[in-house]
Image (cartoon, rainbow, N blue to C red; front, side, top):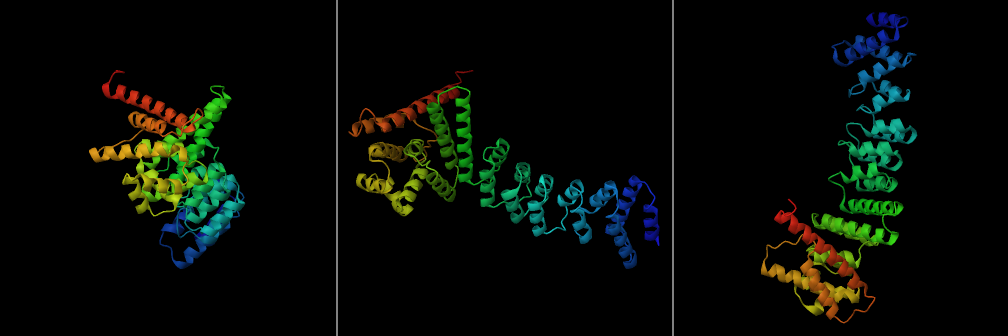
Amino acid sequence: MLVHQFLKWMETAPSSRRADATSALARAWLYSSLDIEERNAAEAALTLVLDDPSPIVRRSLAEALCRHPEAPRHIILALIQDQTDIASIVLAASPVLMDAELVDLAATGGLAIQCAIAVRPVVSCAVGAALAEIGCEDACDMLLKNDGAEWTRSGLWRVAERFCDSSEIRDTLLGKKDLPLDLRQALIARLSASLGDFAVLRAWMPPERAEIVAREACDRATIAMASEADGEAVEDLINHLRSTGQLTTVLLLRALCSGHVVFFETAVTLLSGLPQERVQSLITSKRHNGFRAIYDRAGLPTSAFAAFKAALDLFIDLVERDPSVEITRLSATMLETVLNAHHDSGTIDNFDQVTVMLRRLATEAAREDARAYVRDTGIAA
């Protein structure tokens, strides 16, 4: 009887009053101790509210039911087909909706619908993958910032591929602590290239110089990231560097002269196809012939062999003298020794690119040493 009176009253009441009454009836259905007959009548009344001409009333219904797991399913499904601002309220919160329904709406709905799905308290891998594939930039950015979103490796890569030129997406991805190392490197490489392009556009430096600066910045970041990663992540990173043409001689020399022997060992292992234990044994034994064999098998340039061997031997000597020694950046002393060994190898000429590469690394190391000296001694103060 009360529901019948409610429906009669709804026919003439102003929209604001109807909205308040709808919210009250929905809360009564969800939380009050109604008997079966009253509950069925209230549900029927709420269903009829779906036909109310005022969006204010239908919005009130959506807000009242959107977070409850026992909200009438048929009402929830009807509300997600309502106008966008009402549908978004339900899509952003309702636990009643299935993944299949959310994926379908992500594909067929507009940008606002995708954004509403992206901010749900929990977003499954399946829904996240759909948004990664077809979602707009704003929806993908919201999804990346959503702590309740579950991600697959392929989903993260897909977002990065689609929006690689978006600084917002790139910054959000780089801010994720669990981002795969190879993807992080790809984003940093893209950022370095963008900064180089910007420097050329502003006429701050010629294209050739900008390319070198961008590549060196990327190499520094790559080695720094690898030094903090575990073995599997380093393997993924090196495979990514190989596939993108970034696993260069200068990068490997930088790693070795920065004390990151594990990176070098892993790269040689993957390049040579030999077991890692075998590679590690030959690298650390200081046997010239053994190292030369795996070096050649890895396809590294003959002209740089003396430089790699000198860097490796010097590092092993340092560790033997002091097992606790840590080299965390390019060492000017090590590079000077490597340069001398390369010059004594008899493989250089006036156009020797290995010498150019080593001299550039030595210059960078000297500047780093100077900065460290000033910082440690407090001269700048």
